[in-house]
Image (tube, rainbow, N blue to C red; front, side, top):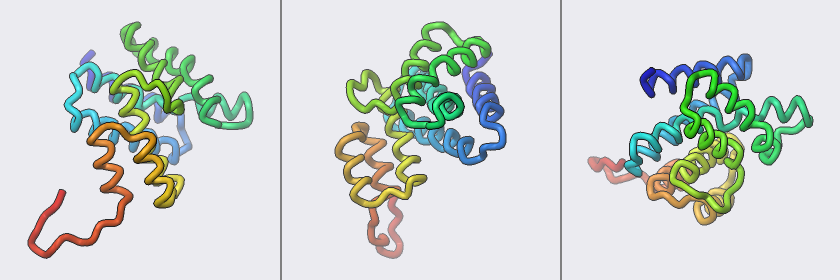
Length: 177
């Protein structure tokens, strides 16, 4: 099966996993798209790009199980519960064992912002932050703190500034991207 086909099948399975919860489905779609964009802007190799996109789709798979088991969806509980669910899904979809392990590692650490050990991990964290800052209606201080403490890629920093830092309108006739 082609890698893009696997990503699409994974996305559809995650939609089904979160059936009836449009907010969570919208969240994973947004995180996936930002992860995809940051990875492309950072010129990741094809395999790392694929891994970060897959991880972005399943990064919050531990929320529902954590809520059911503990009555909370705290980030640490998501990290604890998520890998087993991700492993089962990825294995069922025929993912390679090493890829399953890396994606599960990312799921199990996506709320841990120290000892980030790869571009896939860094980009997943940044993509999730871009979406969470918006969904949590973070103020300028929180955005600034995230820029200083979390964002390391040029692409992620650029996107964060574009999304959240007010900038005067460009002069008429000029186009800024």
